[in-house]
Image 1 (tube, rainbow, N blue to C red):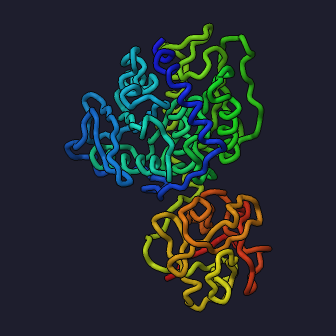
Image 2 (cartoon, rainbow, N blue to C red):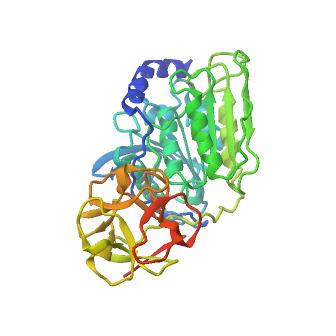
Image 3 (cartoon, one colour):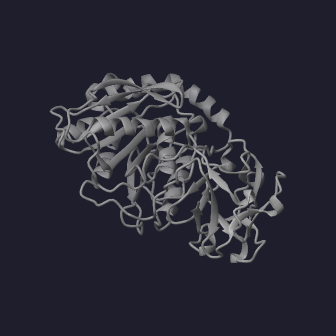
Length: 453
């Protein structure tokens, strides 16, 4: 079948990716182009389209990148369209996703294009091309690439800003997972086919509608990894934990489970199958695959359930302030400033609370790299790259690593890009000299901060 012929030569390459990855990645990314979006017409609405179906180039992170765009027939510039990304596997290409390979149109965009057309041509599809045919997302550059594509597409075509979706298989599934972590307020829902944590997870604490599909016999990216990705969003979405039923080995069937108890607007669905191994198109009753698979219908149903749903407005969006100017960081509970004791510049000095005095040791600049910089060359740092409660927030020479990257959220919290933990005034104290640490986000006012010029 088509997927066997295309995928088997690259399984060894994916194994090399896994070996190189070693442990789960957590890569920093640039800020999202926008936060949770209210339904609104994009700049491309109401005017002649500036983009058409075909291959397009774009500059992103200093590189020339490309993607294939598939605009519906009889495009109407007054109609906001759903936007669906389809990410290729390791060794695959954007053309493989767009063309559908030897299965052609029937498998274009994992079978979703055919279903979209039959439902009224309401979807624009995008197939991005990965660097070296993969999605390593080094330094967050592939997430930035997605940001840039969204900006270009929304300026040139009429897009429904509440209807952005991502899907992908294998390495493409890993990239889709990275977007679920880093752009939960941009994408409405994602579908991860046989993915793993290979492209990083910057953030990863916010809810997003999440669907995972994985084979019991997957010997490339074992199903345990897919379950771990799923369980992250079971927690984020407030779903009731469970061990969803999975088909018996040898049954050649599949089971789809929708979790209960999830926050309104944030469902989690798990689809486990037996038969085909590392594959996005299993067919019940066989160990083969093909466009007649059940997966495309299930993913399409998952995505289109949101067509008439007002997008959720909680949790608050991540909205970094403008970069470039030094500001004080003031604790909401204490009214005191984030301070470096005695204006020391020594690496490893732990930040503290102190009466605001506008000194250089209290003036912080939020950079385009998501760093909080003081003195012009020292960055707020999770000591020892710690990700546990109680990790000291210290200053260190700026190095661009993930433990020096911070998300400044509109609910007043400051969360570590690497850990997802909140910047916290120890013991909820308000006294001068109170040490600043990382701690699980609790919603307490000792974890809420404001920037003041």
